[in-house]
Length: 581
Image (cartoon, rainbow, N blue to C red; front, side, top):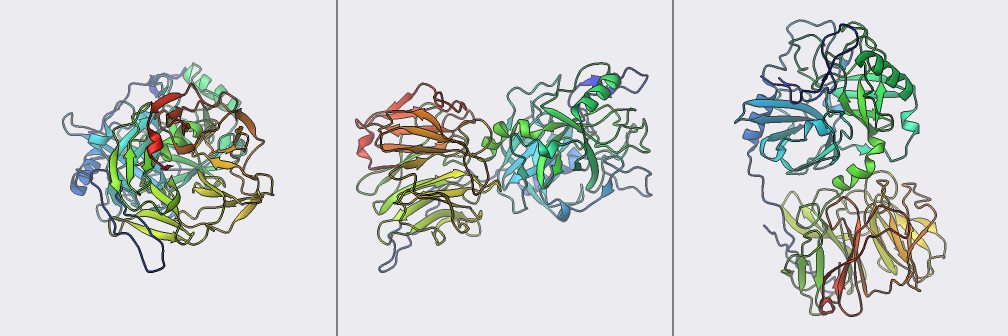
């Protein structure tokens, strides 16, 4: 039997059944591709990038976890029920919500199982509720199913295990605040993924907007109700915070709704299944969709889900984009969520030093023939969790990308035909246009700047001129969110050594807000910005001074001269390398 995960119960003021604050978990090796060289063609190096250990859990075991987690809770009805699932909702298919996934947790030792919903937000990333994740070992006991309409359908869908889990560090199980989590899967999935709402997007939460909630939750508010055997959805109008706060105080007799981090949707419950439209137990962690974006996560409500006057309560994703997005876009070379460093010697030898937070591991040899690269950048252009290497080849002046070909399970080279190789400075900061795909920025010799929106497959759409001859002789770099709003930012260093922060707007033709002076005297010989080095979810920068000392500048998420904390030495002797990336 699937049992309740948390004792988070609240009693309504009236003589209603015990009310639950949480809808909660319902009780119930390295591959090397040969260098791609041709006569008069590019001199591409060996590729020796690592892959994480192959999943040790078989698909059969993952399917078993799924079956046990929802055992006896998803029995197809033999006759129609008056109020199915997401109480008051309607059946739908996975084709209408391909990013919807099932999260099943089964601890065989304890004999307990739990079920939640989730949203695929990158090929191997699932957004869900913290109360579905906190305190549980999803790596050991979890299973994820994508691409299946049915809850117990062994004939369709794809199963995956969990490679890593994260929930908001300040999640509070008593108040259900900060109820957001991200699961990293042990393999990328081919299903379509959904993007998060942007930080500060208030328009998506306007009262009266229509939102859609998806899930396989309880088929009724009555005791002994089953999970739905098939995916369902319900359309709900968004509710003003003041209305929700007042209603929930009346029902629960306490102040549990937190404006700014939670929101409500729907109409007041009637006290019975009849006339009530609401998610219920088992829908936890599933998405609230507005305008093609994830604006909410099913979080909590009253026990039975139908207490008169109550609303379902959701996590307000826009308030947490800053925390969740770095955990979604955290590809690195060692698969631990901390950005790593690559170093090239003048003879073309390539070495890797993995991040240990505020220090670097001993270097490891990666390959030869890298002397023909003018520059190299790390970026996960297809968001498959495997870091790509983008380089300009000195031989032909063109751009190439090393990526993992999932059909052959080997790293290969492809030419990037959509971007010219003659610009003076390049950066791949992340998503500049709001479509959740990494974009490229390039500076021309005359100081003009061009944005190349990414296609998500290693190529880019046509360039967009975003600066007209005003950035001459600058160096651009940066990867990820530096200012704490969940959007990728850009760093620009001018010829006098002044460093400016350009905060991303995710608007294609005006991708940055007004610049902020961050530092002066930045006259280093190398700048590396691969993302979050320390593992705290904030982008960092590594520099090398003229004496060969490597410095870590940890990000603070402060868009000011305090952009970085006190720098930390990562070691000396780095002048032996003529390229760091």
